[in-house]
Length: 491
Ligand SMILES: Cc1cc2nc3c(=O)[nH]c(=O)nc-3n(C[C@H](O)[C@H](O)[C@H](O)COP(=O)(O)OP(=O)(O)OC[C@H]3O[C@@H](n4cnc5c(N)ncnc54)[C@H](O)[C@@H]3O)c2cc1C
Image 1: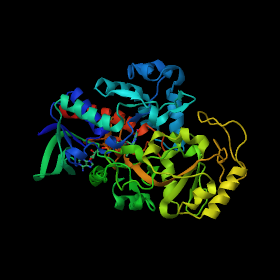
Image 2: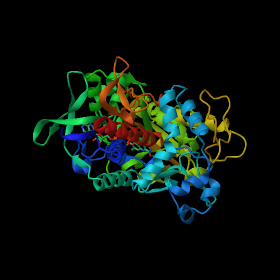
Image 3: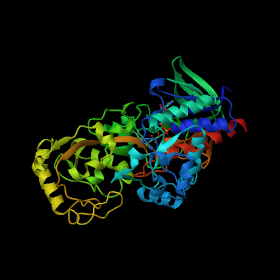
Image 4: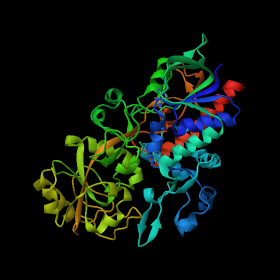
């Protein structure tokens, strides 16, 4: 046998699996990376590095960010606990109650313990200020549950995982794509077929962990499973997640699970590149729409910008944008809220004007119709106090599409417009796994020797997603998969 455990992929989930398998006694562990060294690390590299996890007392965060008060005085007082019930409630409501009951309980129940384990492996953490918090009158206001990220975001997370793996003697082969799974006569998985720089070869292993992402970067699969308009979407992250692991697993009879027609897609700069940019990473995101108004090229509003905090709506808003004529729309803000725009807006080039009429005339849309829509919005805007830190209930009433929070009139210059489109992040459909991350077969029995983690695990997310859950799920199930694989191989 060449290796105790072969892990396919080098993203967050695969790294957690590889490290956990070493910890659980596997000595010879190999990670296969389809990309070259300078493109390694999957979507994890491009991510914001944000982790959503449950904790009962804010002081528990000090384990991860011991000096946080030095950087953000008042942090502990301003962050609310996020107990398991709150995580469960968020996951249930945004997935319309369709999250897999068993898998979601594992995600929630093991979230804090896993993030601490990662920290113990050398993954430094920091407060996710620029990503999720807003500053009001000089004071940071933090959302529930999503306050901690890896130091230096996804770039740092990926780099720290590679360092941790290297320190444990885990081997990595680049430009080495897994192409198929090897099986013995009984159907147990015994290794992988690999296409590498020297050609095709077989690698035998006591167990194989698939952590090689969804099919978000494969336009043919997007057309097949997600349908229009997803085949034309820009990809926010890696170009290498083309469904290879799902293909290999389905080919040997893995059981599909979850919403195969669903994906995570967010509002991004309309000028963003076709695939993620290694330096810009997640900075093309445009998530401050709850504080503005969004119109399409026909000049119509089409969504409730203030339905909820952005971390609970952004993952489904990309799809709403892509469905508009030309797949574009315009986020419009007035002078009252410019201070609230996420720092990521600084990477964009807004259209700016001193009046709404002048602003709309500069945009490639039906400006008369858009002006009518904005005038109608202003005439129906909410009465009361605007408060960006809570669901303030400042709602329009009587519009075809009402805005249910933060609906103050656009009346204060300067006005700004940001052109946006929908970018795909990752896909929701995957394979079914057991509580031990074993891949389940079409006969509903685990496929011996095969484990999966990360985006490849189906069933957790449906229609929408609470921000920060993807990396957390990847780490939780990656850690479990690595332990299970090591035990299968060496036990
Ligand atoms: C711009 C952006 C921002 C994000 N921000 C956040 C965030 O802040 N918080 C959060 O929770 N989630 C975030 N996400 C989602 C999160 O990044 C992903 O859910 C997570 O990284 C998935 O981890 P993974 O290990 O499953 O896949 P990936 O990190 O994508 O890793 C997949 C790996 O498999 C490799 N691979 C693919 N096919 C093969 C093959 N045939 N053989 C060998 N290797 C192969 C790829 O090259 C890659 O190394 C973000 C995603 C993007 C794109």
